[in-house]
Length: 439
Image 1 (cartoon, one colour):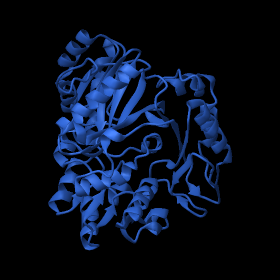
Image 2 (image 1 turned 90 degrees about the vertical axis):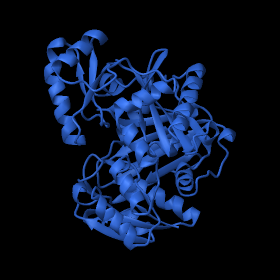
Image 3 (image 1 turned 90 degrees about the horizontal axis):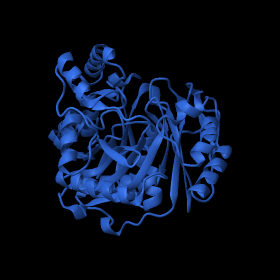
């Protein structure tokens, strides 16, 4: 088997490492700005697909598929971001006779429609945030929905994600302007101006479940590798993730798990996916499904012992796992800190933390360029230990050891966060950064 990775950076390196262990030859794609990137160096072959802007390289579907065909690949791994949840790309890959390492394009299309995804979640018995059943059509419908739901509400793009096309409304006089802005943002980012309205949940926890499914539709073919707490965010971008969550009670965890199994088996979902929830006190609500592997998947690997990327490739290519879903046992506590570059530049010094239970996923090396064109994530520092307190101490030590020279990073801020009394107590919500860090 030969596989091309339609992505860059840390996730491309992660996929290449899994493929090497599986005996799979890899092809990397890179823009001219990434010519010297680690993923291009590590792969068995590398192909340049265009200039630095993503719209002219990593997002050009035909170039990616042609690169796969010309290099004799059997499969395409989309990584995260870029085209990983693009149903049109997944369909084009299949029509080119290649295996898409992800769900069937029809499933991606369904889950990409947030209104349709809400309906599927309800069928599986999962609670959804009170909101409109369909996309709203005009100001009159929006005002009627707000009257029924009560304020505050959030307007969301039906085809959206990543915090784009979302507007919070706290007063009736704000409805028209925010509806117009949300529609424009949705059209600009997703070429789909449909929006729907939900009651806005103030200061929730952001909880997600890691799922692997074999596509058969059988409940026994769905593995849930525990939950992750992703509540520490800035501008809806995650900074720290941990598994398990310090806030989810056992009864809620069981209900979430049962609903996830029913949803993914009902969809005949294949591969890795994440189901996301908002937790509000003793209640939780379905938010969305990310039909791909997530940036934060390592914390689930650490507590479950399952190589998620390997299993994702195996099940999409061969239709079976290397493990028994019912035999998975979760152990200990894992925490991930995302290390972001705050400036572009070139790495001139690098000291990577080590020791028991420490993992460092990145594309960094001394001399590596950090271009200004892409996501700021340059590394992920992950630790595992028997308890949350021990894992926090280990993360603090690992962050102290980390040295990245040549660019400014958020590593020191991550130390401030994990040592903050509110975070240490596990009592935080999605407003933690605004309340305790950015003040």
